[in-house]
Length: 61
Image 1: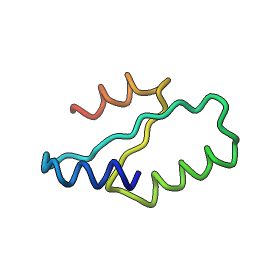
Image 2: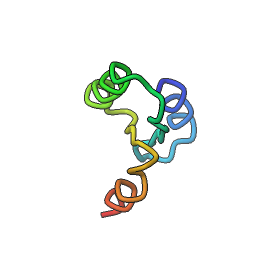
Image 3: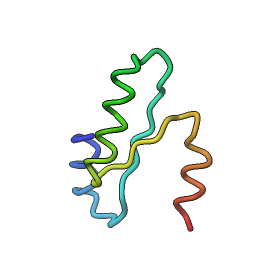
Image 4: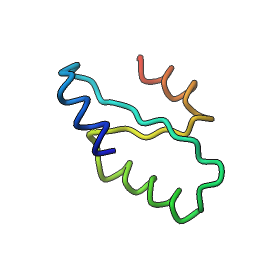
């Protein structure tokens, strides 16, 4: 998330960057941690790849 936030800041696009990740094989404790990070760090939005289509479509509105 830090890398994504840093690169987005340098790109100066003015939008919230999105980190799309594959949750398959990730332990439940890491999934919970990613959810917590998403709530705490507003500089980057995290989305599961399986939910990306719907989530990204909803961000356009």
